[in-house]
Image (cartoon, rainbow, N blue to C red; front, side, top):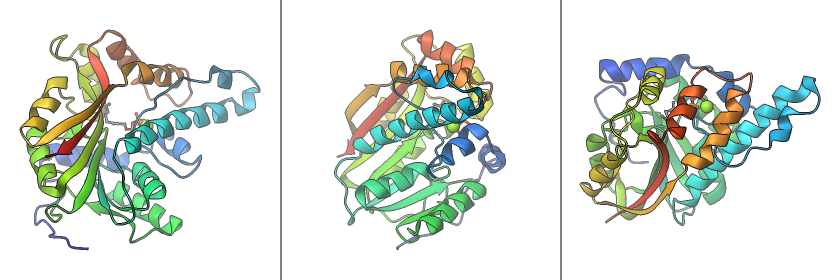
Length: 285
Ligand code: GPP
Ligand code: MG
């Protein structure tokens, strides 16, 4: 592996330190209980129709059924993202930027056999994900690093694909995309699934601001993605509005014992049109 380690710490600014601290402390059952279903620990939301029958049946196993159903919807979201990464094989290297506990990285490796590097500014997430890699026997094929996605120190042109699964709202896109234009091979693929505020509607609504405060993030406008991509040789090949597909996940989560308190803000923002859940896939030209 060729790495040019950066001298700067992964979390350099006061803002980045507060984000790292949030994720170092985070132990939400809605993430840990879902991950324990099959060992894919995700930090993103779900898509697809809910099987509402999970709320019926024996009371003692109700929570277990809800956990499995929320996890199924989150896995469907990850599968959709991987579907957009383009053809990948064991000879390819890919980057999971903002990897969380590594769920998407392991899925990509399992589906394609490619070498995966995941990066996070949270020491705990990186340690958790590397522990998972060891348990799965894929150390050396799937590796996690304490790194800042704005300044990774990885070699130029080494990656066939890069993705952000709900992590671009923690960084300035005008700094992020030049780094991706450097890291990707020419013709390589970038995919993001993200929540963005709908600036056809106006500035961020109160519900969007609540989401920002909850996660210490800064949700970008829809147009900023396209503006910053086109400024950095990233040409969209697919744009999928997943807003309608993610609402059922939030409806079920709001009615589950694993709700964290942010469910109503998501439902309000998605339903009033001020917020959109988008997949954007782009090629580096
Ligand atoms: C979910 O992580 C994603 C984020 C925190 C980034 C914000 C995403 C937006 C679309 C605005 P998680 O799975 O750790 O969150 P939770 O604990 O709420 O399930
Ligand atoms: Mg979650």
